[in-house]
Image (cartoon, rainbow, N blue to C red; front, top):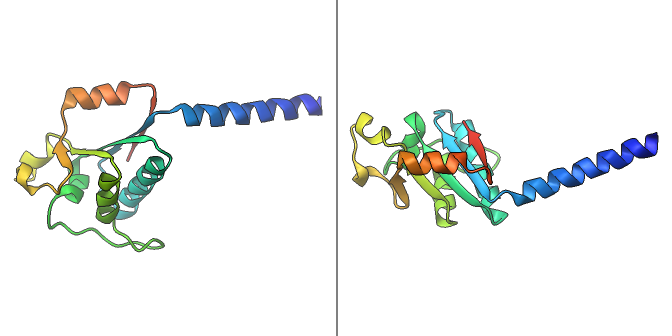
Amino acid sequence: MKKILTSLAVVSLLAGSLFADSAKGLNVVLTADDAQTQLMAMVLSMKSLQQKKNVNVVLCARAGDLAVKGMKSEVLKPINKSPKMLLKGIIKKGANVSVCPLYLPNAGKDKSALIDGVKVANPAEVASKLLDADYKVLSY
């Protein structure tokens, strides 16, 4: 009985890792204004990119501030980087980053306020990506 349970546990672990490797990428919807939460979203996005996965990030509400030129974000330990610094890093590594279409008009800004590499999200495209079963979805 013990051997059977051990075998089942090993098979479950292997199936779990195979499933994780089969994901095409990560969809991240970030609305949190908390710097630690924002940084964790960026760290996981970066780690996914380093594993050769696609990453799509949509910034809404106060998280949209990360995409605005001149807006500062808090530098946090232990990596001594801010969420905005990592956002710029994931853009350079190929992440698809956008702000939700409600962000700019409600912040009194237009597209010219966005940092390089950030666009305004198209709701139909975002919905399509979120419904794609080959992607994991994180929402903060």
